[in-house]
Image (cartoon, rainbow, N blue to C red; front, side, top):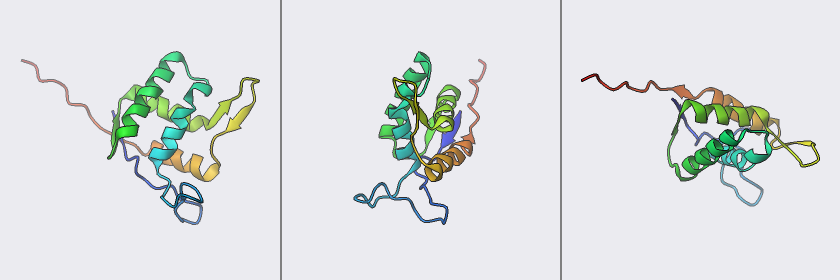
Length: 124
């Protein structure tokens, strides 16, 4: 199991906070980036099981107000999506989702997720 702080703020090369948009001055967080990736996951070459897992992660992240705990399968899907950073159009073209500051920033944050030991049930 992994714990991931999804409220980490995305930064530019110079350390300045990346804003959601010109009209929205809120800081871009890892949560926002991951939810955008998950919304595109059906066009990222995932298996049917991975798409289902991506949907479940999206539901978990969408309501999260703190760091999230991810199973190994959930973390693997997040890692695959973040590492890919691209969608495929119906005609086979690949389109990047984010530029380097956000895509690589998110990759670094996901790679730093903390492994949590799951306590084993005590034998009776």
